[in-house]
Length: 303
Image (cartoon, rainbow, N blue to C red; front, side, top):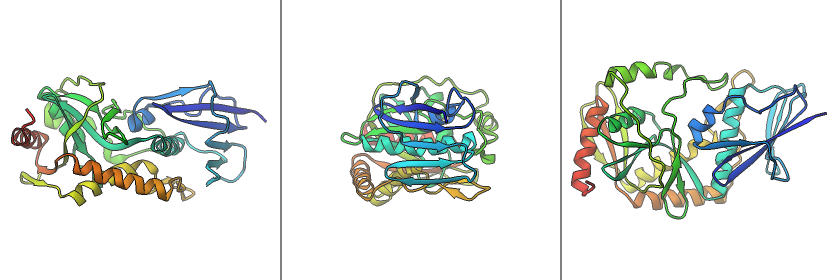
């Protein structure tokens, strides 16, 4: 029985994926755009350096299942490409965490020489549109969906650069994201220029934007607990614990985390939240949100 092996990496984090049996293949997943959108700077290699696989997929087994044992994720039977994408995101995020790289569900821009983190938190209410408004005012994009933080310093090292996922494989479909272009057209007309920033950057200000056509403009400083809570939620977003992997069979992502790393991650969030101002901004449009960001930067001396 043939075995196909592939390594997937983000910076110094590497996972090995072995497929045992099944049809001849040239890749585990043909389209890597989802992984790059979720984790940023993902590379695939067929030069195998890890002695043992992190994921083993027994393609020819009759019953579809997933389990995690002895540090290895085991898949059986057929899995859709989108389902595999989500599994690889969780496993690579887990490996990143082990080597001190924290993927953080957020967008970010460099504006007037300062990093601004747009936190996704437990809701998703407009970080991408706020980012585009920043670009309209001269900001550069540092990250679009994920910002990768260094555990020791809190510096943002790199991030995803795909503003949208234009194509979603089966198993990652989202009907609520089907009209992204319409949202851009409604707020901006033509899409603004989106220059990119690739240099590691400190995020001097964190904002959780909430955009709704009914919101009156409101700016509230977030206390230390709320800032750490939303940060932790943004980090745990990658471990797949709130996701159903396969709706037909009711299969979920196993727990690949450890208690010690959860505690270390919580300590990082507490330190990170204490190290910069956090604000929640509610408004009817990204333009109004960024008006308030401009005011905050002036008040905080970030100009």
